[in-house]
Amino acid sequence: QNEFLHACRDRSLVESLATHPGLHLINVLDLEGCSGFQAKDLKVICTRARHLTYLSLRDTGIYHLPKQIQELHNLQTLDIRQTNVRVLNVVFPRLKYLLAGKEAPSGESFSTVKMPDISFMTDMEVLYHVEISSQDDGLIDLGRLRRLRKLGVVFNRGRVDLMKFLLSQIQMLESCLRSLSIRIIEGATGSEAENSGSGYSLIDSHMLSPPRLLQTLNIRGARGGLPRWMTELHQLAKITLRETYLTEDALRMLGSLRGLQCLRFLRKALTEGTIIFRDSEFKKLVDLSFEGSYLSTVIFDNGTAPKLERV
Image (cartoon, rainbow, N blue to C red; front, side):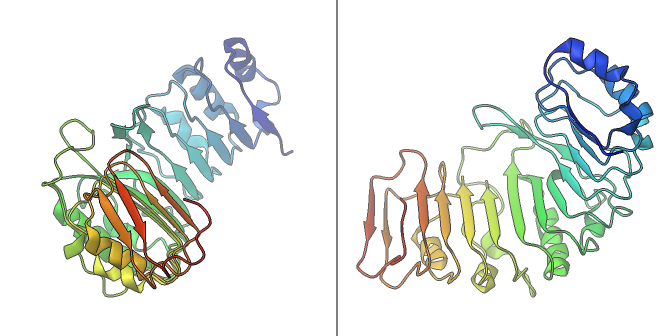
């Protein structure tokens, strides 16, 4: 029997869920926003609802996953966003979607789960966001996930070597990867740095075979410029940039992307107060947005962004 059960914030409903006679029949369980949910409740659910294929613990008080969760052999989706779960020591052989990451309301700090052991999770399609702190964090297996469509990774600012290794693995995903998010944080505090003079420069990175089917790219916290391999991503339709401190040279590169339709400059994406969109650039751009007050002037030359509808 296929049942969907959404448990709300009421603690009494959580308690009734744990003792529900039909719990063993449930396939999909969404506990998003259930602040009264506790670790003991999750233990009961994992023991009794072993047929779960979908489990959302998003925005609950959970801070670790009990060992009983390994009983969920059929689990395909695990959502632990906005929780304090930092370690996932369980292998789910059928897992397709792992969603993680907790951001403060101010947006100034971000933490997430460590990269799990993905060597036996070859069905993975979405891995978003996971922290990579060493080459032992499953990076060597990343290139083997030939069904991976969406990838989000988080790095400590000091681990330049890991970024290079990540890109070497992404080359192996060129036929499947559609969405990529790269986020660099400060290792000491877990908050984004304010000093634009530090950090790894993506402009120096290389990929012989970049993911040419990539449609969405999100970069946050990587300074110094955009990588040249981006010019080969002709299907790239949406780009979001934040705390990248880009100069006009990067804007020229973005303008040459012939498939770009949506461009979002968020907080501290650019260094200059005035930016100019040149003639014959951004030929397919439809949606352009800016966040923050760092820009004083935006100039559009005649002939630029002829399809632009929203600013």
